[in-house]
Image (cartoon, rainbow, N blue to C red):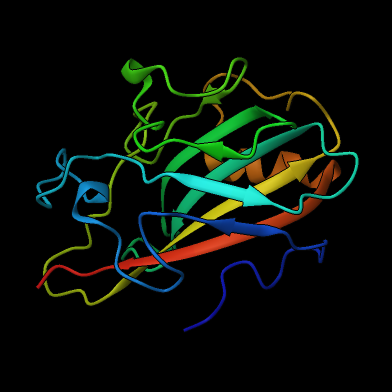
Length: 175
């Protein structure tokens, strides 16, 4: 399967990891969707990052499933304006009611129009899906986009200020 980020401009790479799943491994059941009936809790996994480029003033996080049967994939979550000194997000930071994002960070809308993390829910019999957690390091403290900006628009807008990028990919399948 192809890399959905292969056509983006090359930038320095830094490390993104999770204590909840390893690169290429299955997402935990808690990161599956409860809203869409995949037996999970729509609970975002904990994330940790290091090695961001010098001059990083903020981060943007997106979570994308390129394997969704839509022709355009499916965006599960976005967070912009994560402070440049941050190095982690706790589990369930994708739940706005939990209040776990760092001060100043802003949830974006996902494909379902919700302003929160939406867990993995590959359609029955559609095979394994990949979920790319992507952290982009930016040279600006805030990304100037409207509150309703989609993750795709956020990704396009950040290209002018990106310093580095980190990926962590998890998988899910519904048998």
